[in-house]
Length: 279
Image (cartoon, rainbow, N blue to C red; front, side, top):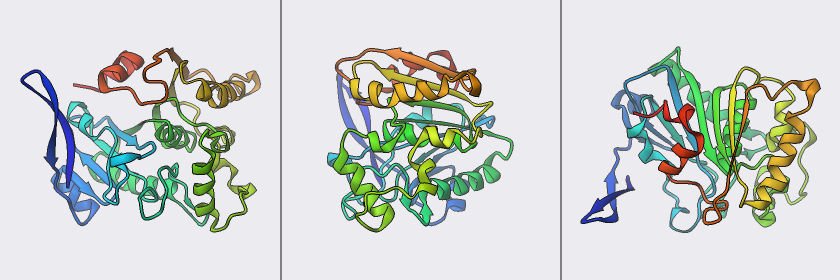
């Protein structure tokens, strides 16, 4: 597998293909310590207190590929702790989906399956480690959902979706929902509402005790209005006492808007809590 990294040559930043070994099983990948297996990228690092999990957002243009690609995989060598990047198996030209929020099908919830695999990975490489999750946009939704499910000790999300039916690109949302249901009803099964909503998932209280760092770009008006404000309305409710460990980070970048920030920008946005995870 080749993934692009970026390198300065004569003062100009150029893409350099990096050949990454591919393994037939997760256990082979874990033993090797670096590479990919299916929809998982893994890089082992020296310290074992945490395992960092990076989730993908939407995959567009040249990133929309049958070969799994991984957001932020090149950050792994900069981390102190083991890193797992997870691509969404439903996102590919053959499915027509550019984003699926790790939903899968109603009888086969992708995010739940991913966490079964991640817990296996932890049992092999660092049984006492705690998970830290990160993502932006759709990857931020997956990171928040993972925290609401009780899997993660810390969550770093940037401009995440919070309730999927509020997604600004309605055709993409309904394409995902159609695949999920196996029909064109356009209805979320009521018992599955928590899979589509961070707010509904949070009502279980499983996230209590976890730190959530929620960064919003105020230039991304639709995500502030349609996702951040409903999140605040729910998690600022005094009877729930849910905001003690939810940290709200505001910034404005009219160039980025909804685009994910670079590594350097991410370090600046989250500051010391995220910087401590890096070398």
